[in-house]
Length: 171
Image (cartoon, rainbow, N blue to C red):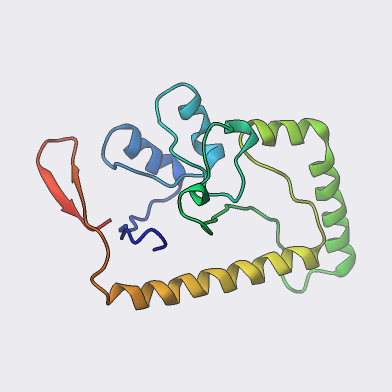
């Protein structure tokens, strides 16, 4: 949206099948998480173009951020641990304490960093704020996307499928 390029989202059941199709030439571009694609980039099977996070990754500092070309762009993948709403507070506190202790382990930190990830320790309240902020951010994107679809101002990209015949894609 921010670059005024219209991509068509093709849903996959995870990064693995999407990367398989990218590596085999079935798709031309993929926004994959860095941990899932970094080894393919390192061995030269994929060419990384940019990272979508706000800052360059220490694991691939040669890759620019998308924001270096599209100011304000930032998309980060994150993972968290949740429990049922009625989980006892003492259980939540114990889980949180142990997860944070694990995230503080230098070996785990090093392994995450090598894969392009960073640890974010915090409280359940911190995690709730992250979820609320991400929900608000993406609700605005979805709303804006719906508004923009009615405007014929997106660029069409011309791509060639690996089997030969060119196709017009509304990316």
